Length: 312
Image (cartoon, rainbow, N blue to C red; front, side, top):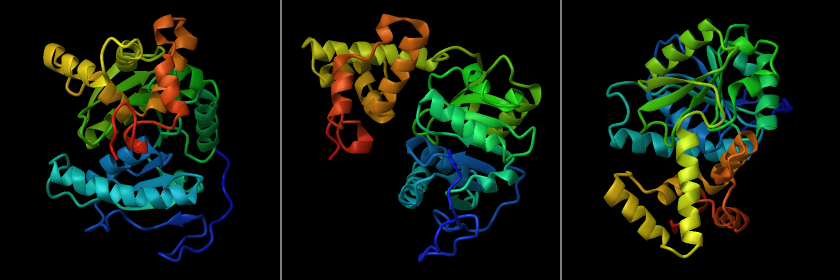
């Protein structure tokens, strides 16, 4: 991630000299006293979801993305998802929302007590972002890569302080899923593990620590299963609706694998399967032609309005 030039003044609110927009989503009812100050890198689906989770638990968040228009859209989405999470009882009652600051520069991360990277599922992109942000934060500040498949040790090689890096795999949407997969690399330090445990505790998430490997546990099991479900549809054995209904009614899957694919994002799923296929050699992880075709057609799931199902 290349540090952007200073932003122009925002007509909707004051922008600080470092390119940060101090708007909240929604406006805070009072800034909570907390020892956590979180920086989230990436204003996509997972960056927004993690931000909503943190704000809803009273943590201040600095959300960074190079694209100012994406950040502005993210503010609106964050406000809506905060309201939804509150209506669903997914946030602690009586907790004042944390303050949200958005910006295109990573410099403000210098004051963060933890940084969560949530950019696209591409190893080179993630490594570049993590390397750049590590130059702006204090040694010992935990760097958390939110990844569904890329080994932590592979990313740690880009850092001067690999002991500060740990992996998490938040499920989408993070504010509704109470368990997070935590991936400890071979070089992850004890201080980093303690810090991420404290952060997840403040977010009321159940942390399950696993060994570093491609796909870890959840993606290594779930994503090939979704790939197989797509192949069943591709071969004409059953419709997407029939596959999901059978998996729900017979095997207890809460949503069905193909509705889950739409929630993950078909493009994200293909990226994850590609990582798994390249790093394990398991041909069951080679993305099916149907998944690749859906990506080519822009049918990415819920976020695009259409995937295996139509959400328009």
